[in-house]
Length: 163
Image 1 (cartoon, rainbow, N blue to C red):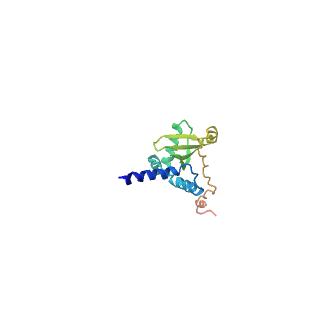
Image 2 (image 1 turned 135 degrees about the vertical axis):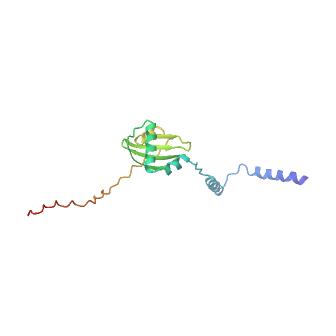
Image 3 (image 1 turned 120 degrees about the horizontal axis):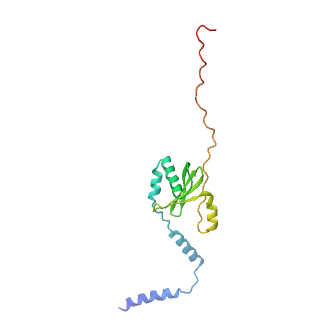
């Protein structure tokens, strides 16, 4: 019976004897390594993003155009759209409209937030914690358009009997 009560006391004394000692540099390094390796990144499934990726280009453009218009933005004609990146737990799409570019943030809950791309630098300056990503510009196609492949019309036929 004495042996079982001695073990916890010895363990407690050994732990207390270590109190107040400065950790070695190696111990601090190991603790920092363990802490950083213990960090896990969790990705929340975004069913709405999955559905956006399944849409045709035209359907996706119309969906983003409606999101911009529902939020009070002006987008009469959308030229193109693209997924840009993840931002916090949201997915960021960029809609290139005739009125300018719009950032559309899609949350896993289906909520949508829209910001004019031109407004993002000022929003970030006014709200240091916000740190919204800047929109990437629309890709510009510098290739010349293909030349038409039409054949030249045949010259009119000369009426019979005329030189």
